Each structure stands twice: as structure tokens, then as C-alpha cells.
Image (cartoon, rainbow, N blue to C red):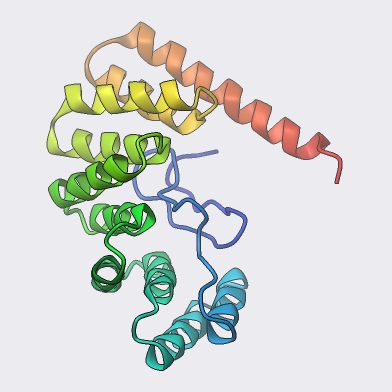
Length: 211
């Protein structure tokens, strides 16, 4: 898996925001109110992002307190590189449901896409407070910290992401780049190789998996 490419999780194609690992939510787009949310999800699956936005907007017009619809529309807008619009939607989702860790995580992703790294770190930190074992949040916070020059903080986050999920190739890849930046060339080589091995293993498993 090459850094910077678009990856395809089970429900929606999500933009890779920095580093190797996708900036993805726990379960990607969530199904909230029936009909228009479902229409939006199906359109997003097909890559019809404009149509998906229209469907989620209609869902919101019918139920202005539908926090999931705001998140769904935000995820699509991130795919369109409309990060500020995504932040606005996720601000509303957080306002409606301030205990939902996914909303903070995705808002962190949107802020990272908008290069608001310090604000993204705050949202990832809040995600971790609500869900301490979210290794994606540690990995993404590590990338954001690296962008701000906090290399030690970034290293700590990548270490924790790997501790929580030793199969996370993305965290190894990100840590390898950081080690190279810090002059640890042997550590860079070992982590890079581990990332490649894990990615190869994952691809092989996907090909041989019995339906």
C-alpha cells in the first residue's frame, strides 16, 4: 500500500490524510435515519459524492438533530477535499452528541486535512480520552504531532499505536519515517520492513480468504 493513495474501507472510500494509514472513522459512514441516509450511503459507495451530499442534506433538513447525518456528510466532504465544510458539519455533530468519540476523531481528520495540526491534536486527544484503545487516534495524532515538530510526542504515539495493534502496518510505516528523520537509520529499515511484511501478509490473506 503506497502512502498518499486513496484506500477503500468496507463502506466508503476515504481520503488518506498524511502518512501511510487512512484517516478513517471506526465504522466509516454510519446509517442513521432511514431512506435519505441510506440513499446517501449508497451514492457514496458508488463514488457519487455530490449525490451523497444532497441526500445527507435532505436527511438533515428532515431531522436537524441527526448527528450521524452531519458526520456522514462530513466524511463525503473530506473525500472532496472540502475540509472546512467537513469541520463545520462535525462541529454540529459534536454539539449534538459531545460524548461520541467518532465525531472528535473525524473532526481531527478534517482539521488535519485543513493543516490545522494543533487543533487536530486536541480532537485526537479527546478521542483517546473517550476511547483509550483507539490505535487509529494514536497513529493520526502522531502524524499531526510530527507536523508540528513534536517528534518525541509523535514517537510516543506511534509506539502506543503499535502496542495496541501490532498488526498495524501504517503505524510501523509512520514510525519508520520518523526514525529516519531522527537519524535512526537501522530503526527506519526495520520498521519499514515490518510494514511491508504486514502489508504483504494482509494482501495475501485477503486473496486466500474463503468467502
